[in-house]
Length: 472
Ligand code: BES
Ligand code: ZN
Ligand code: ZN
Image 1 (cartoon, rainbow, N blue to C red):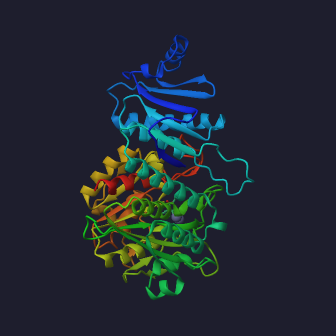
Image 2 (tube, rainbow, N blue to C red):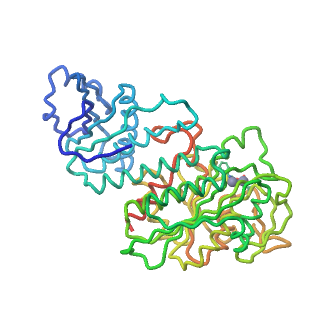
Image 3 (cartoon, helix red, strand yellow):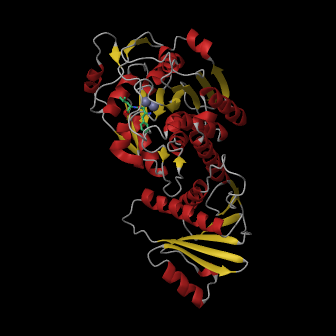
């Protein structure tokens, strides 16, 4: 989606955003148009007035003042998504969005919902299914050029992440994904280094190599860095993303009929973290961030790691593997251990780590935990602003007890209870710096789209993290 900031409306498809107290006189509505508008938007919503060749859409939000601001902003995103679908039916190529005295947040949210809902994954279709809508012109003085640019960067990042997630493993192996990172990094002036198997062996990343043993494809370990010369942080923030391009469970093969159907999405964390550094670099936010992506598929090939194996990890700790389907933590632990060398301000990971996270909150929020409360508190604020809400779980040390092994430093599963927290506690053992864990198993992938979160990969987490770093 292209965005532009314009002074005067030119498109035949004009959208006006309003609330109950907006002054509509500038629209010069006739008596019958006014009546139509009143009927259509009695409870809030969009009225369509045709003055061919012009189509005029007036969206009136009638949330009362008791509603939280973040909830109302989400109404704007959803209304933008829904009107975008109407515009595509009308074959509109572009649209002008103006505001009747609302703030910039409303205009931006409406535009964002329209753009994110316009995403399509057409790689495996013949041409001809493309949406007509390709450009949103923002005609609102309260919105700055920078805000429009940043909206473009986060939208691009979300599209990019959705593409990565939606591409099946046949076309998104670990080596292919690393090539995608290279293309993205080039576009955004991000420094990148991709390690192949021999370098990963040299680094003694035992967890990543163990998971990769059942696979035919090589693993990859990608390091990306963006350092703004005016970075406010002296020590970098390290972002780590789980890059399991396909999760069969390995020898602990996933059980039920459909549990593997969407496991191409198990690199959702990698997509979010690489998408986040992309948007940060494009927007030139004054920060220093490093992004680490350990990547492989998890398969039960002849040499696959087996339940009972004891693996020596990157930091020398040993892990008794009791379930090869708990592979995410095996590869992330190595990356978190690697992250320590940067003496980071904090280490944060995003991962489709546990079914338990998705069962706890469904797709409505990601699960967060960590040992740096101030970061979690700020994430909550960004989460509401972006409607990528953060559900915090406790991170008490009691849960680490469940990972004690009889024959190694720890075991890779903690039992049936508190599965998301024991996974987080496992990873925390590898972090020598403040640590935040985001489990995105619930919101990162939708079997059926919900409003502007389209079917498949959602990119959930990128707008949250961009907002977090933009407000740092
Ligand atoms: N990739 C899965 C988690 C997952 C499940 C993500 C469903 C998205 C949807 C992860 O590798 C996994 O298999 N986790 C196990 C952990 C268990 C063996 C301790 C799980 O959640 O069952
Ligand atoms: Zn698994
Ligand atoms: Zn997995």
